[in-house]
Amino acid sequence: MDSFQPAVIAPQPYLPDYGPWNSLADTSVHDLLEAASLWLLERGDQIDASLGIVVSGTLAVERELSDGRRVLASLFHEGDLVDLRRTERMRQGALIALKSSEFLHLDETRVDDRAATNPELAKAFIAQLADHFARMQDHATDLASKTPLERMASVLFEFKRWPETTPAERSRDIVRIPISRIDIADYIGVKPETVSRAIRELEREKLIGIPHQDQILLADIPSMRGIANGGRPRRSNGRQNAQG
Image (tube, rainbow, N blue to C red; front, side, top):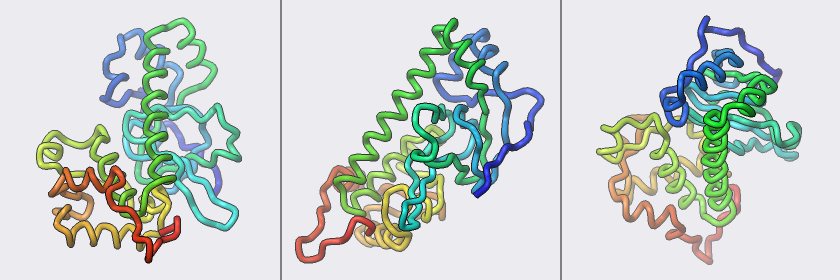
């Protein structure tokens, strides 16, 4: 896939309404936006950028293994800082849009200069990077230690914590599914049919419901948390391979 450098789509870039960006002082907002341009992305666009903020939508780091399998190594949701400068790009993969998205592209040198003299801006960057690192640690544990069904349950709780989930959805234990089932499969390291099979199994056991195509109701949260935490190991006489 060719790299994509979209045109600026707004005369005035803006920040997403999520922390820590919505708590910055005006001077910090000015410092950040002065070094930014807003890009409009469609699903599948490969982004030729290493630094920016997801204003809306979902981005991912995509890698292709030597046998042709596609892997989504990281997900970035609304409000996330994307900083891919510290890993060799060929080893790390490509940054792509998984749906229609807005990406606030940041000029690396200008932002670094401003962060060096603006402690509030530097603190916001550190907080965002630490949060994303913690998510990736949890995700690595899922891939290394859990069965496909356990990974599916775990990723539902991950999606439930995404900031664009509305208060009404949280109060009803509704999980908004932000990406396709194919993308979920590539993120949790299984085949698409394994994702569908896991959802059917959880629904059959009345642990979840599906009120809409892009939503899942967590009908039994304690049981779902038990599965997500490793409570549904493989049977010894029917072990599944790592790819589901």
